[in-house]
Length: 343
Image (cartoon, rainbow, N blue to C red; front, side, top):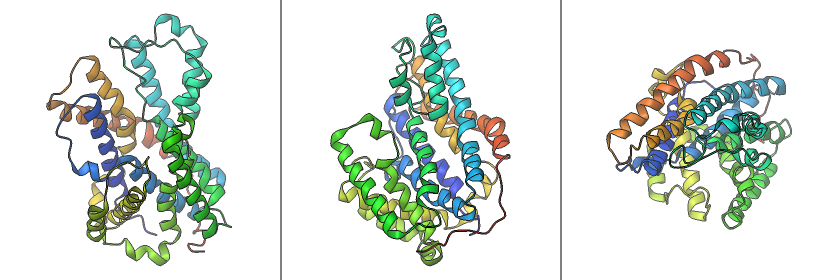
């Protein structure tokens, strides 16, 4: 499979949708582009991961190389962003001097560095952070829960999609994940809500297409207008955490839009070759939004431009100084795909 696609552009669009949603909520901004309502960023990230991570493992089943590459993709940028958030919390007074001498503060951040999970960090440590109107309203890394889920996807792929994978197994896991997602609507368990199982069905949509690409790839090559039309007719809203039958069908058509857009006019992404700031946009937009909140800026139209410019600037710095250097260390295999693409 050639690497001529629009996935870099898609990731950036998905990240911008998340920025738009959070800026709208926390800065009370109006005029959010309605098109973003049709294409929720988080499910798009999960679908893309299902397709690309599965493809990566199909090309090379070396678990050490796979683990190294996934580590380099996620951890360096995440750790750098956590360090910046730590400094931000010190300068704004969230972490007072007494907390600097408290071991719970360092246990909290050490847990975040290893797992990315704020739920786990809060459960094993009780740091004396002082959130409030004069500091920060809450921890500025709220998007980290999806990083935890992404790390879980990375662990699932070698276990679920190995040499002996079968369609019955994938269907069983898909149904189990979907069942748990439905149950979670009423359970509202914070532990389940930030782990892989209730979102695995979305990831598997992308994975299933990649595994069957040799036979069904034609459904997604140059067919974005068709998938978009179907999606517009079916779409009921971005409530992917409430998987009613209508929402499930909407996410399936969303997956069709994502994968067909990636393979329709792939030249659209030429401008992004060698540059991918989407992860940085995703990591840094909430700290940027909080800075504006600290200074009391809300409900002003110019904030749309300011938030995006500042976020893009931080993302560009992250890409140039952190992500790109570490990604250059990724292990490369010249082996052909070792997995069959249908079963």
